[in-house]
Image (cartoon, rainbow, N blue to C red):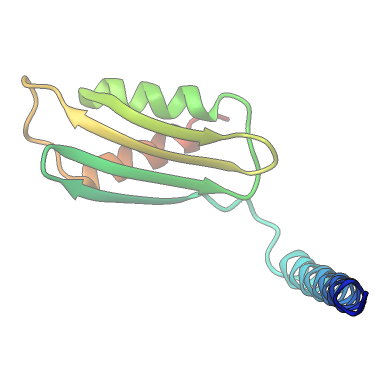
Length: 128
């Protein structure tokens, strides 16, 4: 009987702690929201990083807001560069996140990470 009470009290304590953590997260999120809304309201370009791999590139794109057509524009930029998408993960729910591995096709070996980044940023900027 004592071990059941002990387990129950542990569960109750854990539940209370989880609720406290949830409240802390909500508080931090609201603080973050306050600072974001007080900062500049201009349309910032998404964060784009490109790393060079042995054969191709690892491309990451993150945007606070999801825009219809953003994925299509980025994929068209890859196609123009001659990059084949070998692997990709995309989330378009509230924010936009893309992680893609682009492999260079045999006919084009003259592109570098900076060119890929500029092409992705240009594709996003030209969506308007």
